[in-house]
Length: 173
Image 1 (cartoon, one colour):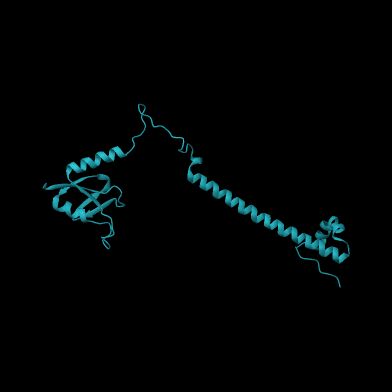
Image 2 (cartoon, one colour):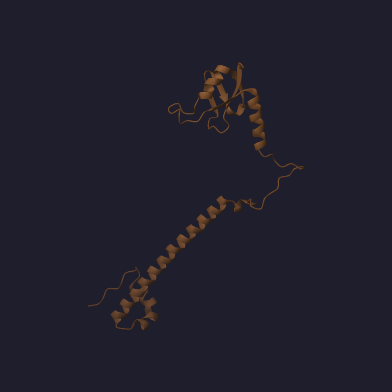
């Protein structure tokens, strides 16, 4: 068995740095060569000390050949950027503008819903005010002894004079 092993913080670990047995590991530095005894201990190190059975491991521990294979697989997984010789092809299903992204559509939908709610509230307010106006006109017509249809033409003038604050005119005794 080799007296040295390679150790690194796992790429998907939330930890960026970790100090273990006097060694300071940084995720950004990649693989470290450490003594086999330290590597074995690193292989058992978990993210949360309080619950090690349910906690994920922090380190990848491999010998040199395994680490090289892992690095090669990771390089192949990453899609290279487009080059003039090999440009990337855009697919029709991909959003072409920021306005077409799911987030932008959701934000636009939320704005539409808010506008509709505001409009509905305004429509309800208008309906309530129209009912109040009709009730005032009827009360005024009853008070003066006229049918409501005849009073409709005179209602705006009567409303301005008698019911300015939205109160019904008091009935005469």
